[in-house]
Amino acid sequence: MADAHGDDLAESLQSLFTNVSSMVKSELQGTNNQMDMLEKMNVRVAAEYDDLGDVAAGLRVFAEQMKLKSGGFDEFVGQMDAIEKQVSEFEAVVSVLDRYVSVLESKIRA
Image (tube, rainbow, N blue to C red):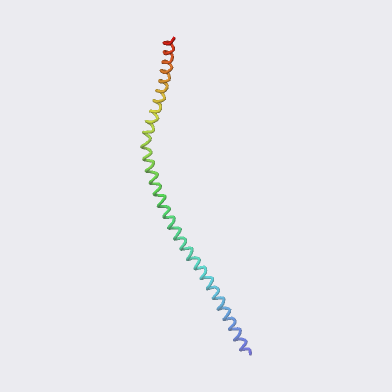
């Protein structure tokens, strides 16, 4: 009977070790699957950041080109400011002449 009891204990222990081994193997497999998924996600995110880096570089080049082009307009803006100043001066002269003509008209009618 002791021998049968020992066999039952050995079988129970063997079953326990087998079940614990299966549980640990499953846990490790789950962890391994999570690590694989994280690796794939990291590769995907790295590819996205590379694409965004390319876009940013393109935008930087575009901004530099626009800055160079707008620098060419600075000369024209200066010319337009000078013309606007001259127009204001001419308007002032025309206003003075208009008053002078009005005074002369009133003297002629009087």
